[in-house]
Image 1 (cartoon, rainbow, N blue to C red):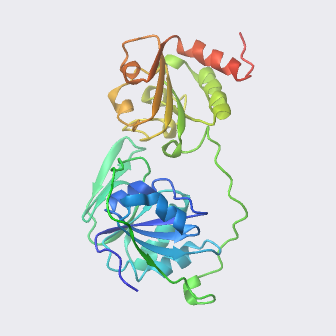
Image 2: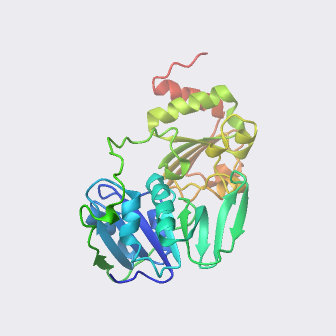
Image 3: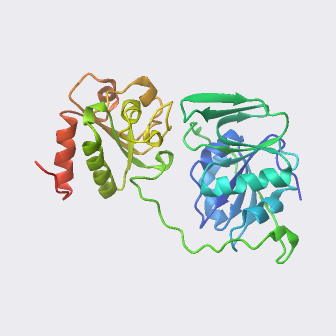
Length: 315
């Protein structure tokens, strides 16, 4: 088996040809080197496009077993300095097994990596911690923390890897049976994975308004986000905070209700294709950023939208 790249390699868990959230960022961080494991790999590799310079493909049509997969790619990754996987459910399952079979330290929730440096969020996302690993390591990378460069160029170099022999020690213990995969509830899903977000700021109101916002988001297939002021006052949990001290997002669509647009918030927005802002202050920074800016009362606008969607709103 040919060794993978000596620098950084992304390991991506693929189900049904779908790349995991954060896959493109990990491949970009690994300078185009990736090991792709799962089923439907042709579609997954095609989705990586020119971003992937060199790919090692391991078809895994049977039961998903992090231990067996880690054992199957251990030799391939033995000379790689940094093994990187997205911090998704499958990635978080796989990373400890990779660290175990490779005999390396594991750094969880990285926001950037280098051969001798790992940066992670600390204190609930309110700070950044920089570590200097003493040797090769495994890391999970938080989705939505870096831009994905536009790439064009030569075709991807692909290496197909043999799967483990049925009944061999590489298969490891009998994995749990996968009964079903259910799509997440959009209104409560991880903000970093959301394609549509309804965000509320101090100008939206309190618990009542944010409860209504969640109902509207559920009907629209969107997730709920908030500013630091809202999470600091306890209306929503910190995991709902968008910004450099919260969750860095990159949705396709963002509706900002009562959000003025502080720098720490807007710097964590990524590059939405569409931003709609509702605020009584026509000169707020978020209004200047918006594709559609509505000078209106945010709570009243939310109630009107809820009624249009058939939600019973008192008053």
